[in-house]
Amino acid sequence: QSVLTQPPSVSGAPGQRVTISCTGSSSNIGSGYDVHWYQQLPGTAPKVLIYGNSNRPSGVPDRFSGSKSGTSASLAITGLQAEDEADYYCHSYDNSLSGVVFGGGTRLTVL
Amino acid sequence: QIALKESGPTLVKPTQTLTLTCTFSGFSLSTSGVGVAWIRQPPGKALEWLAYIYWDDDKTYSPSLKSRLTITKDTSKNQVVLTMTNMDPVDTATYYCAHRNSGWGYMDVWGKGTTVTVSS
Image (cartoon, rainbow over all chains, first blue to last red; front, top):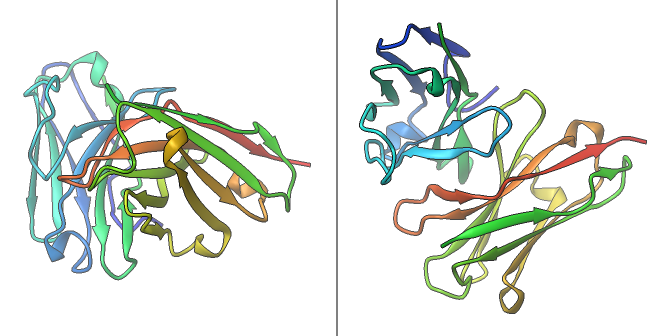
C-alpha cells in the first residue's frame, strides 16, 4: 500500500490527452512538499519527467505537464504517442515518515 | 556528465547480508548539497526508496527497513555502499542508485540498476 495513490492503469488513443493522478495527504503533498514524476519504459531505469510539481527538464517534450493542488498532483500527457507507453510514478516527501514516498505507479497503454 | 553504476551479487541466500556498491562519476559527494539515493523495485511492483546519504555524511533511511540498512560513502573512490542484513526472498528486486538534485530534491540521474535474487 503506497503512501501516494495512483490509478493502476490509464489508456488512450494516439493523439488523445490523458491524466494520471497522485493523491497524498496532509503529511506529504498537502504539507507543501514538491511532487516529481518519473517515466519508466519497459526494462529501463526511471527517468524524470516533471520536477517541482510543474517543471520539465530539458529534453522532455512539452506534451508532458504537471500540476499540484491541495493534497493531490496530476501528470497530463497530450498528443499521446505509442512511445509514451510506460509506467509513471509520482514522488514526494512525507514528514510523518521523514522520508521519500513514491506512488504505486500507473501503467499507460496507448491503444 | 553524471553517471552512476550499481554492482553487487546477483544471488544471495536467505539470512545473508547484501552489499551493493554505487560507483559514480561527474560529481563529488564532498560538494555541498549533493546526495545519493538507493531505490529498489521488486519484479512487477512499484519503486521503493531505501536510503539517502549526503555530502555532510547525513543519512536517512526508509522507516520500514531502517533496522536492516546501512549506507556509507567513500568520497575518494566516488562510491556509495548499501548493506542490507537478513535478506529474505521478498527482497528480490532491482536495486538502483540515483543522484539527488540538490535544488529540488528529485532523482535526476539514475543508474541502470542491478538485479538481486534472494533464494536458497
